[in-house]
Image 1 (cartoon, rainbow, N blue to C red):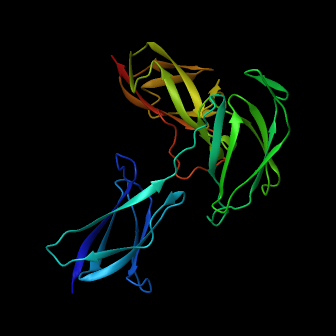
Image 2 (image 1 turned 45 degrees about the horizontal axis):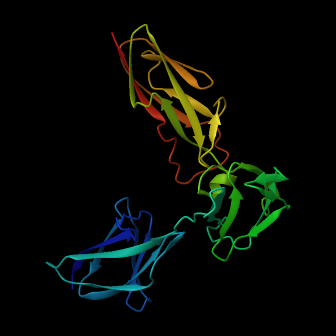
Image 3 (image 1 turned 30 degrees about the vertical axis):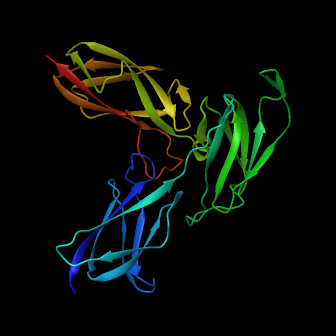
Length: 295
């Protein structure tokens, strides 16, 4: 018996069979009593191991919000056999309302240990009562929703509507939300939005201007719940890799670049408020541009 390389791949169940990163892969003996190894799939959905050959192993897969068939068995063969195994992951399918006026807010809640947060209550208090929608009167008061045993919650909300949300267990934290004009939205993003994207006008990854000249570029800032934040004062911070090459003068919805010494500088935009922690922190989409200053 010798060690053999073993490749585990995890793909989703869509027609494209996309790779699923961040899946914990646990390898034990066939009966599950002896632990051998554990790994996490990378961006290609791959986790690699060195395991004794001529042995059958039990594989267990785990990632929050993802469903797997567990356990499963693999038989590792001696070299020159190739020990490559592919498993399927059932991703959450975002719910979509049949009513074009409704946005479905959905998502998962976890406690501070990472376990599913069951029986968490959220009160949705409308800020628009009464209302008239397509000939119907919209009446009624607060709606209370509770997470299930998996920590999952789902609720239909009117698009464009505003609500106060009372989250129990967070010192009765009240969050003011604005529902996007979209078929669905992630509920944690709706409750705890952060700056997530910037759109430039014109949209270019690189801008060129002459030394001594100025260039004004428009921009719009968006939150993770899809809301356009409009004037971005206080919402974002600007970072300049070389102030000698280019100067930056941000405005309400435009930024003016002033050409200095010929060269290249990188301008980055980051969110100013870090009171809400995002893991992983993907930064600001389109948040980095290049400024080329020519003679």
